[in-house]
Image (cartoon, rainbow, N blue to C red):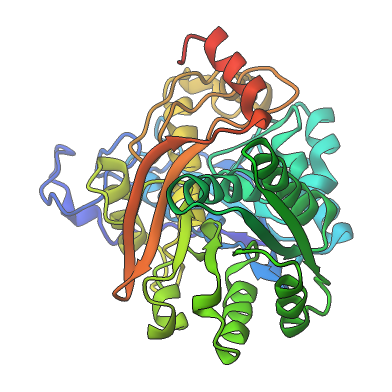
Length: 417
């Protein structure tokens, strides 16, 4: 387990009165410029980091934001002690991690979670504990179809439907091969939604699944070709997606198909990793604001990462999501009475009551509420890998899928639309 250690590297950027002396410094929490010194508030987080992917950028970004908050007054003077566990994509370890944080450490909240399986294992645990988890890198259906988990990211369902909707509307895509991992509540769940979208709009889609324990990218590519699709949707973590695209490059398949990917490829390191061969040929969903967007939260996320994270911590969508979940959490606690911020029941009641939070990182409002499912982020952007970076080809648009009809109904009832 990792514990957040308070860095004070940016305290000198603030004047004695707490006013910002350096506009390049990040804004965090109360923004006092003074380090929090009271009794720590324990917050937990769980990520998955092992084959087939690393989702730790969500908790890394949350940790960076909490460090910045601790250097700027904390929560009513109290610092956040952020305890992070790695489930290593192991169901037994995922269960143990939740038990350790909720029972042994008695954390008052869970923020920044990101995993393929943690939410599936622990959804019932969080419900029984009356813990509303503010997740950031969800990938499984349980994360979006449970009463006690809400995420700032979209997961593979929304991310894949979004990019295929763009390509169907703008590029005339008729048939899709959805290449994914053979994890039912991840690959099957998200690829089935793509099939549903395509069929609703006069097209077709077929799924190609890789064994997550021993993925054979060459066989997957051959199977995808055999579907006869005109579009390859590489619905995989960044490392595996890059391997599939490298296999396609070896066979010089670039111009034979249109190419798409969910937000897992929206990472500043990806264009260089893929090289010139793919320049101008891969469309990628961006679940949150494009990195080049000049919005206050987007720019503050970069400042927080530069000031309080490790240099090698990814700057990707999951990092944006971790920052945003942490920021919304801190804003919620700062509105509470100082004597209540260490009370798990009152903290989680406050989280459940969130409605209508806004950020330039998201295309729509963030809300929680009491419901059997939570999916506040279902509108995004599409970018094209271009000139060693990403070119925005469509700004905020809502995903036109029947899957989101119940969520739109809730938002209408809450007056958020």
